[in-house]
Amino acid sequence: MNLQTLLEMPGPIIADGGMGTLLMSMGLAHGEPPELWNVNYPDRIRSVHRGYIEAGAQIILTNSFGGSRGRLERGGLGERCAKLNAAAARLARQEADAASHGVVVAGSIGPIGEFFAPMGMLTFDDAVDMFRVQAEALVEGGVDVLWIETMSDLEEVRAAAAACRQAAPGIPLVVTMTFDTHGRTMMGVTPEQAAAAISELGAAALGANCGNGPQEIEQVIRKLHAALPGAILVAKSNAGLPRMEGGRAVYDATPEVMADYARRVHADGARIVGACCGSTPAHIAAIAGALKEVA
Ligand SMILES: [Zn+2]
Image (cartoon, rainbow, N blue to C red; front, side, top):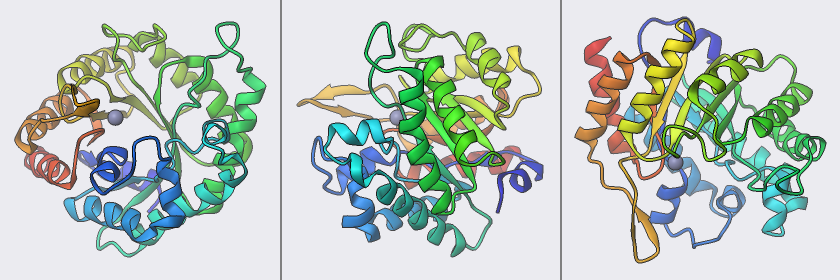
């Protein structure tokens, strides 16, 4: 199913939940690039997608969050960028095509993880090049939409969007940022600034993901909705406020807590509702159940 067809259907749309934290629970080592599992353990990645689809997800994100060439280079995997992303897309595509309901495959593109000049070394043009390799491979692997997520810096959003446009001019874009620093992103971007900048990029939908749990995202969605009342908004909250335990982030929002979040954030204006770090298919099933009642 393509994104436009999904958006034309009435009612809320269910997105999937977190990938990285789920892979860690399946044995991904600390510091091991999750994208490697697209070729080393493809069955595990497919089982994650299948779990979210069976829970009711209508949009699934590929296991390519850290798959920009820049980020992979730091793990010594820069040369394998195209291969790892194409594999990520194909695995999600296979599960979406086998689903009993329509599922959109979104190619996840996360931050490179470096600061832009003048704070850091990264230039806009270098970032575009790094994202373009990833975007081309995701499109080649069969994604329906390119999904730029967990962004903090509008310059990086613009670079990723430019790369996506170069890779596939006609493909829809979705952009979500993480507003985890007193209502702003780590780089100081407010929801209102994000709304203005992202709508200029012609994104099909925009919103917020990750961060410090449902309450934070609910506030952001209210602000995005006030700034852009007609926009299609995405909310993908972490499963609660993370706390550190033995050097690892632990998320303990129950499926019931996430069901309540889904009802509230939908009422606040989010049309596409899913979850992020710490969530599992059980959380997505609870979200889907809650939103079925309001539809
Ligand atoms: Zn997250």
